[in-house]
Image 1 (spheres, rainbow, N blue to C red):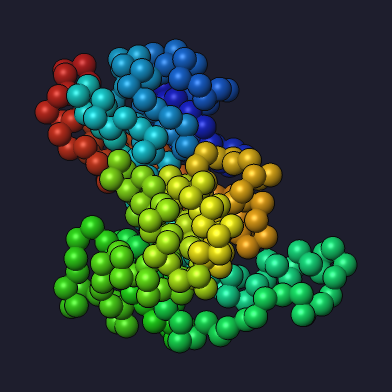
Image 2: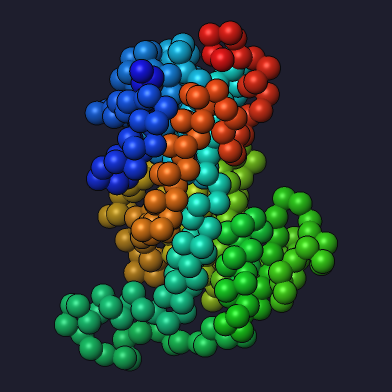
Length: 328
């Protein structure tokens, strides 16, 4: 019987995963702690690792001498040392498209919340104040400009939804797109132009060494003082200290943050305690449909690998060249 280590989960049971892995004669071992020392010890006699948000660094990978696959229960890979896994012939997979609709919907919901001050008025009424005049002036969202940083699956889905509301959409990313590659109603520009022209800016890029603090003091200074920043991707894309300073200086009107650096953040500190900042607890990916899809596909990746097949969404195909006989 194979043993599959689950480092951490964001749902109350593992029945979907157990049912699928049972077909591969595998049993789940759910970690009770997520620190590196504990996970390294737990991984030593396991044939696969499934991880949600917990770190799987080289120390854990090195200890997992029987491991054939590390399956990410999510999209981003910044919590897994992919290079270390590749050197040891361990496959790494993710599920890059499971929550495309949900994250796009959440980003759009945050945009509408900022535009119509829904969160502000909700907090005021719950505190007993039913006063329209307490709120800032409101502008219609139709005709305003949304700048999307990263035009992958989520960015494209958001662009389509925003354009349907009459919003002007700009986009930028690592690779310039030809007009024929863009969704209808979307214009391409560089990051600096997007920052200066947009009324709302939404981030949809992975966290890498190149994108860490992509939005810092210099970029925030380029934004309109009436503009808003939205992040549903990775907390490390924003320099939160710079964001707090920019808000304090009136360099932008507000922000909506679903992801933080670190999580959970200290909500008593700026920028999180600023009334102009809407905070949600890394919830953009969640729906009944998305979680079922994620859990099924990640478990199937592990089962396929343990049964000798090639799983979907393999992110390090070079690992195949390093696999020893014991890993087959």
